[in-house]
Image (cartoon, rainbow, N blue to C red; front, side):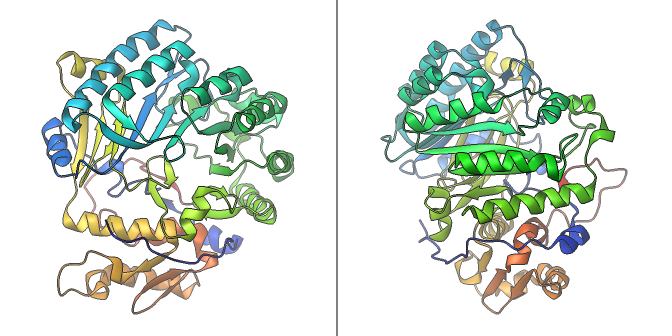
Length: 472
């Protein structure tokens, strides 16, 4: 495995409203490269098995488990979820999930070590304590989990649906990291997005996680929701800073009702305009950096002593479908409807529709619907984009370039596309690589887009659907 990139990063970011306003555009989030919209239906179980065969079985795995169910609908949500009060649906789903776990165990080989586990959704705690025990026991029957002090085992939690006692149970079950969805404490905003969640119940859950010994507590906020303003969002930020979670993710709400039906329930006239959203972003950066949080990249902030910030300082930070991670270089095996795996030189996505997911498993097949085998060029560009997203630097010497080919020649087109951004002070282009300046960090997606060969390929004829959210 290549040695870690040792770098030094100043834990700050420069907010230039005029620059962001000028350069804000549609673009990928680069949780993968190539991005998921480039996957195709020609990739199936045979290609996945070939990818697994090419990976050293001694390398620890990362597991992702998707639990799609929620008891109520949050209007802003763009996740693959199923809103239902019928708990029997979870029983049926788990039965099929166990089949998939068994199939993956056969493909991967028994007893593979797992260093990272993440439960997402939906709302993973839609499952009862007994169901969670059963699911974890099934996973442990197929895989060898790292000891608690070495592994990173995380779960997403809706504070409205758990008690301090449930938090203690989750810790007993082996989870050592927890993420709490909050979004905004303002009552009017909560009403507008159908997520009523009091400050008191949220803090009770956060404190319970701290008392139970969770190693890292993360919270999610969203700016750009209906009825939000700079004045209304300030008190939420104050409360979060006072609570001092280890990590804070502040997402820009992307209103895409053409893609996500639930967003059609939001009254678009209530959404803050672009200038207000920009001011809210500036407020977030100002408050959190003043409170000592390190800007990790994209939407993420962390305390300096958190593993995420430490990994970035040591040049070990990675990025995958769950965002920034300390273990994302591990092969990621994803389980459940719509889940995306990243194994070797491939990505693969399970069926997105529950009935199709069940049908595949009824036939004894892995429920893979589509994917992609990465070319040598894809792997090289993935390495470039990963370095830029995580380190804000690019070291040409670390890249797996073809023999005898200089980086400046291989990426001549990309470097030409970056010149206007260099002239505007976002980055420096040198003979040995690139360095993103403080004022360019917020626009890292724009910088990475210069290296995306799919974005710059000849356009397909006919109208194209909106693929991406805005870069800021």
